[in-house]
Image 1 (cartoon, helix red, strand yellow):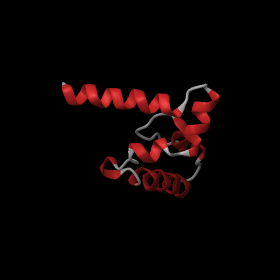
Image 2: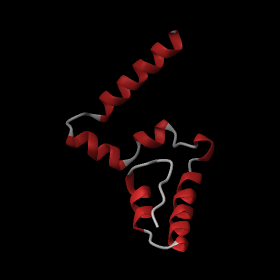
Image 3: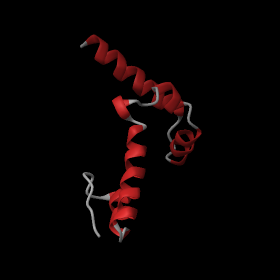
Image 4: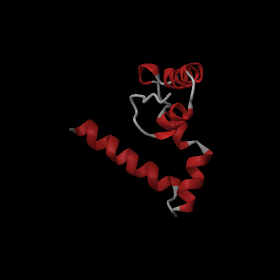
Length: 84
């Protein structure tokens, strides 16, 4: 049995397409639904949390971007938005 989800691509679709019985397809849909509930109401981490994330620090370092430079760009954008 092949069931397509509303996303149309990605791991969720692959998970469902691999399902061959209705029971496993329903299980796959429930797992996807559980993950999406984590962001219900647009719950997102605060910008400070993201900037303190070690993964972001490693990504920036790999690209040669100092965290201070990113914070300056963000502060500049925030100031421009406030002035608008």
